[in-house]
Image 1 (tube, rainbow, N blue to C red):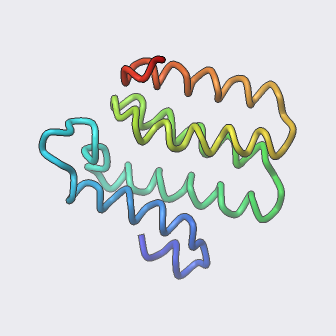
Image 2: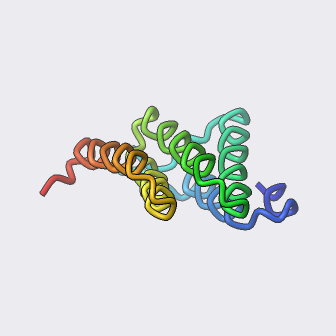
Length: 123
């Protein structure tokens, strides 16, 4: 986690900090929160993808940013942590909008809708 900060990737550090500390602070009644970073491999995956997103933002390589956020979102959705997944899907939507990539915006928005439906957030 601190490696990201030392490498100058402040946003990656912040995201990893919140993700890892949500594990310790998760409310016992919330079965979705915080139970998805149980291995070193998972932490390394998240660090790699979040760092890639941050570096790619600096380089205006929005395709890589989108892919990294989408991978992180899909990881959490596969763990049935839709709340965390929607956070990163929201970031993917924002990146696609910033890049003017309607196809990727539609893809991320569709996945965001499915995740919200699974959480019961339909109105």
